[in-house]
Length: 106
Figure (cartoon, rainbow, N blue to C red):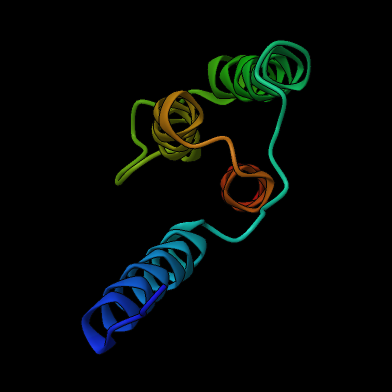
């Protein structure tokens, strides 16, 4: 059988295209990041946030002062917890949720 340059070129082109496609796909994969399990860890984390919010609310009620000017720490905490609840629905990366929890604690 006679192999022509066109046949060889066609085989090489298809192999090169396959290689390039596999390289493209492997580059598209996101790097592995530790994730929080939304069925087990997620509800526990949300409970911790709710407990912190409740304790802060109780402190707010005990120390409420009508003369207080500015934003009360409870309001800041409530805002952070609300933001974290939104984040956990969209992003379950462990690092992101640790940062969220740290903002609540601070």
